[in-house]
Image 1 (spheres, one colour):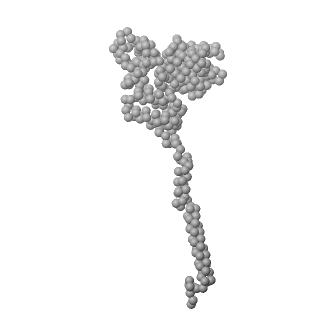
Image 2 (cartoon, one colour; image 1 turned 120 degrees about the horizontal axis):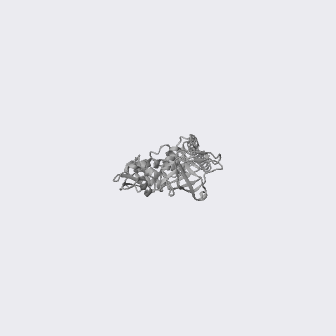
Image 3 (cartoon, helix red, strand yellow; image 1 turned 90 degrees about the horizontal axis):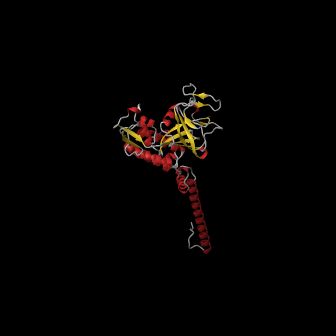
Length: 343
């Protein structure tokens, strides 16, 4: 059989080389096509293929989505603050609360330092939830630094005092700008007349003040500028709204169940009446600034209807549960204690 070789005739050699080149091109094109086709098949084969993982990784790297954002769960949570801990605000505030409580958990003798830190945080910008957390802890701490007979180390608001000859609890209270009743309570003195010279008692540097929030129906008590405790209140009904502004406890107007005349009916109620409406205590107020100026007849007092606490039902007075009225009465001083009422 004859073979096609380079030594064949000139026409036949050129034809062979053309067909040879053409065939090579076709084979090369087919190979390229197969590579591209197979590559596409692997890229789009499904979410389990390597290219899908790379695609997700590129998306996360190039465009951070919600997973990269700070969420409440990632913020520091103050320890031992109960269910309110889930309601967080500014991360820096939560961190400061957590830091203060960590100090107390590590060393209970630093109570006053922690009290001051929490009070400083409370004075600054906080969310309502953060304020509730701080106030709850400060209320708890007040049972130790304020309402117990002991004096905490480093406390500038409470000191030990040695009773001098001629001292009376009332005189000591006036000197300290607090009612003698609160001194009797914290020192467990049931009969003030039994106070003796040489006896050591705990005294408080007053005065106390109060702040009422109309929207929250609360009355917060402060010793000077340090939060002590909060109480729920009832306020004025529509048309008789409790006026905002700054008030002070009116001199000579703190009473235990004083007679009261109903301005609507003219009936005079006395403390022994079974339906006496003012409860256990009356703390008269006088306006000092703002909408309070020139207003009269307003007071903080108890009630014979506890369902009115948290409601607008009075003629403008601030109502308290009777036990709370006694506690507030024992802290506010006529002429010195201020009561600020805000929206």
